Image 1 (cartoon, helix red, strand yellow):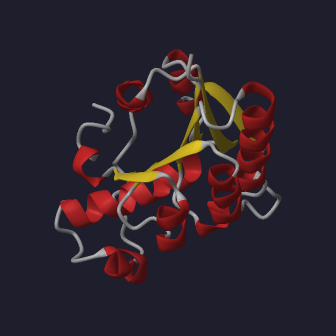
Image 2 (cartoon, rainbow, N blue to C red):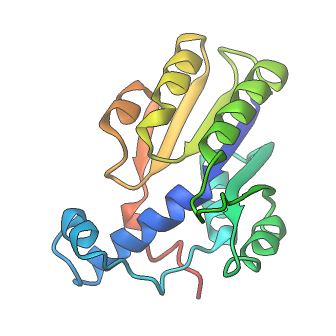
Amino acid sequence: MTVHLAYVDCSNLFLEAQKVSAVARGWARNLAEVNQQSSPDFSYRLDFHRLMALLRKLEDPMQAAVFGSVTDSNEGLWPHAEAAGFEVRVVERAASGREKRVDTGVVTRICRDAYLLGQPGRDRITLVAGDGDYEPMVRQLVADGFDVTLLYWSHASRELQTVASRFYPLDAYLEDLALR
């Protein structure tokens, strides 16, 4: 039986979704303009139930985990993710308010699970993140025989898209993934 392990870098996904939404609403012509003007769609929220449904369309995840950080404004986010079926892994933010250790937490967990629970040549890993820092891990997993799917916005790191077994852009699902 194929095992499907899914991992979501929530901060990465959420912040970039707000930028993609700003472009979709016509508030900016492109992502560069959103970044320049610092004008993301702060009203956009992801629905974890809808994200889980999309992951299950790929293959029902045996295990799905979401990673992020705790802030004063997101305490309701994590129970919502748990209710959708995600294991929640959060870290405290640094004293400066900046997020740290989320990416390394995702990498550590994927590698641990892949080699303890998974079997190369049989099992699937889905990464919902677009940061190029994930490229070495994905490259190694694919080289070792794991099927790695990248699910992210179309502006995901080109290097990351290239080394993954397959890439599915989320842009067409922007409204479907929105919390209503």
